[in-house]
Amino acid sequence: MKKLLQSVLFIGLLFTAYMTHAKEDQRVSHVVVVWLNEPGNAQMREQFIKASRALETLPGVVSRHVSAMIPSDRPKVDDTFDVAVTVTFENAQALNAYMKSQKHKKMLKDKLKPLVNRIVVYNFGNI
Image (cartoon, rainbow, N blue to C red):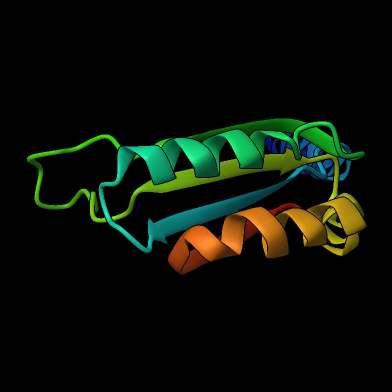
């Protein structure tokens, strides 16, 4: 009986710790993979990276990284894209506010979309 009680208590503590962590960590990641109109064009890539960095200061952004693709010989690595952006937000509400911000919309319309042929976006996190 003592072992059963200890096991139930242990499992309860683990569950509580997990739920507490999930509630505390509400970060959301936003990953954008970009194929430029002119694949491999270093000038366009730098133009995209420079323009994209202007969005680093928007509210709710925990971290933001934009960089060029790293070539790979490994068959499982997709190195067909030109640039990728990873943004971590405080929570899903911050991601939504970022997507709706006028600065973001203007930057996309005026500076980024004209350079882009294709994008793929991934959003994930504890919501």
